Image (cartoon, rainbow, N blue to C red; front, side):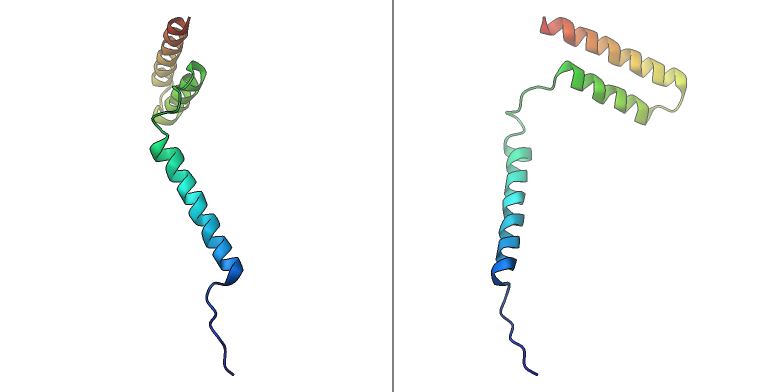
Length: 82
């Protein structure tokens, strides 16, 4: 039995092009456009801060102090925006 190797074919080329297009878009968004994106909002900064507190602190007192710091940063951020 003799089989022919025909390469990728039409479907294979489309798959490769989609992957290359997605890779190019990802590089553009994360490398070239990262500096031009607007600054994060106060709310998103606070959400990230609280999430960081939950992940990095194990004791209740440390977590409370970290969250208090997040709240004060949020208040100062809001005050600057006014």
